[in-house]
Image (cartoon, rainbow, N blue to C red; front, side, top):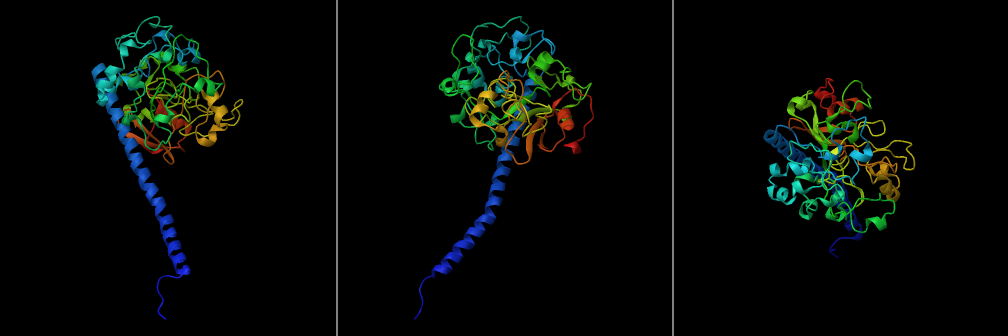
Length: 386
């Protein structure tokens, strides 16, 4: 009698063959998708580099990483993390806000009300005042809601799944949901729903207070007598002539990962604080891109980025180093520094001072990374080192 259809065994064999083919194809598909995401990230960095250079052409300087009139006159020896990098202080607009007109975002820039910021003394080229206007206003009270909640494609790396509106920085329930969230003592109500970004301007190879007002950061020297200053930081933006290492040898913007929850401020594009839209670090516990872990810092045991909310974040996630987002979790830490991080396999993209984009491997040496982050270190570097 003539048989019709497949036997169960034949059907299972066909299904098994299809499953094997899918298993073989899936890595290729995932690789192709990651290649597309990485290409988009590279394109974003090129846009940011072009915007920064257009700003420099118009103002004869790159923008400040963040404008902080209340720390004018301080040096790396007289400043502190608490003052320079505390999100309670009335800081002004950061580099990302200042280049919006050069990213075809003039309307959003106009909505930002730059001259209304508590920390803005204006005009841009003359921020020399002794104290900030509206100093008693809440630090996060300056930004128009349209600005702070807008997610801009040029600031978003598609490889970071945490960069979503549901994970915007600071939600109304955070103070009650996270009792270890740092208290905010200044007057006024903080603004909510800050959109994320994945790129930070290079302030140098150390904390904000060591580089304040364009200082050299010589107080913490792993490679004396080289300066640790980068291209943009607290109250300074470099002129091209000041980048003595050469624009092609100096990192200008690096990738950063978005915070893991709404109180994790990392990657908040419109806030000019270390770990938010400024980076990087070059310290023993956080020496190179995507540095995973340092073995013994107080309760967290995973020293890393230094942001004001790290301690509270660590209480929610435990060992953050396992998630690739370690924190230096002393309760006293402020938003002083964060490392370059990404979810691209093997490294991070950075935009160099000349606008070119390089992929820096996680295996880069601490010394080479240090050289890339600093614009006046005076040390020779060649492309084959990274």
